[in-house]
Amino acid sequence: MEGIPLVKTVLCSFCLKSGILCQKCSEKVKSGEVSELDLKIARLLLSLEETYPSLQNVYFYKAVDAGKTLAILVGKGDVPRLLGYGGKIIKALSEKTGKSIRVLEYGVDDRKFLEDLFAPLSIVTINTIWLPDGTTETRVILRRKGGRQPPFDVKALKEIARKVRNMTLRVEFTD
Image (cartoon, rainbow, N blue to C red; front, side):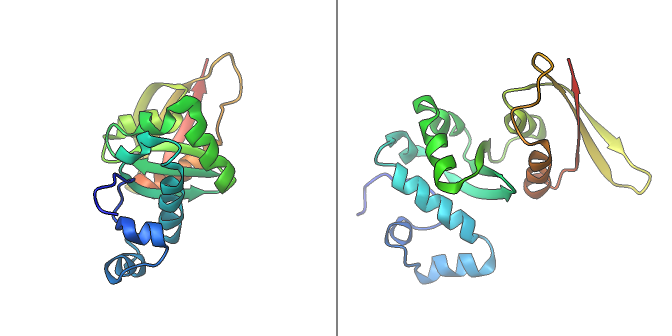
């Protein structure tokens, strides 16, 4: 099995393929470093790898569940590899999980994170709002295309931002 390129994760490829976790991977799950959802998505990506070879070079970090939306955090530069094949990888993930999928880059700055989160809408501006209790909110103003509803669940994306970046968002739209 060695030498075969696989989806890269913090779990070893043998554990993902066999479904039985070694002691090291089992510890990662017990400690919370890797969640059951991460395990499920990593296995799902591995199963899609044969059909979509570009997944061999993808580093999968984490999956974040927010209601009907699932965020998948991947390595720098890996977003296009998941969005390729005419969106078939995302469609397959969506069908198998029953959720809409957002692919986000891990380890990027706040602006890039928000651009990926709210794609395909463009961000007009991002501001930090300082609240009287000492906390902050990040205000994101998005350009609405043709006055239509956004193609995503804003509430779910706010939850993803909170879970991934500990960022409280205030989302507004302009035409």
